[in-house]
Length: 326
Image 1 (tube, helix red, strand yellow):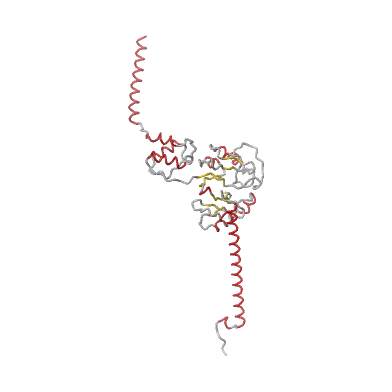
Image 2 (tube, helix red, strand yellow):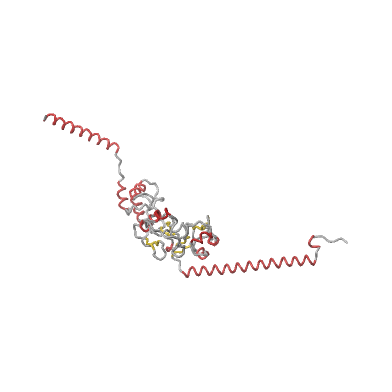
């Protein structure tokens, strides 16, 4: 009996040793050498795993950086230019600085601006509410107001304003991680360049309904009137599907479109009231001058037409360009 047990133990031990040897050689043959730079890059990244870089987490982003031939397509919004410079140093590459971005809310439909049409009694979640119905207030494209974007922010860079019912971005805390953008079911939050001296201009509306319908639901809705586009000398504004949009890469931040908008739903962050008033005064003076020029032109055309008519009356032969034979 003891010999049977002993033999069994020896066989099992032998099998274990053989299996270990096989596994060792297999692991050596198929092992993947980890780039020693990976740990350094991971230590440099902020480790928030927010997904703002386009990857699920910092680990995926680090692997993409190590395998890249050019760092231009990559950027860590949380770490910003400083972190990317450190990463570039580790990888022995160069990287250009990129303008920092910030989250903006493209909806001006505050409480009182959009009509209150229903009362919601359910889970305090924007996605759930928007899946169930169009919302408590008019304009089905506007902010739901339940703060899912605020809940998604890991940097406490947003809060819901109790008076407007809209989310507010805290500029000094926002890292442009993109979490709030992904969380918003209405797609009214976008990342936008912070801009020179933190100045930004954008249309605070995403409603593509026709003017009358859009304005019925929200008094500040864009109607696609194109006055802002006509005012822009840099072709930075396009009007499609009854909605004006601004290309931040082309916009020169002149502010003329802001004062051209009748409903004032073009937001001009960090522009002073004096700046906008001055632009409005210049525009009014120019429009008045153009109006006077049009009136003068019409008057001149009318006088010329009357003069021509009088000449034809005094000398009928000039009408046909011939002389009557006697």
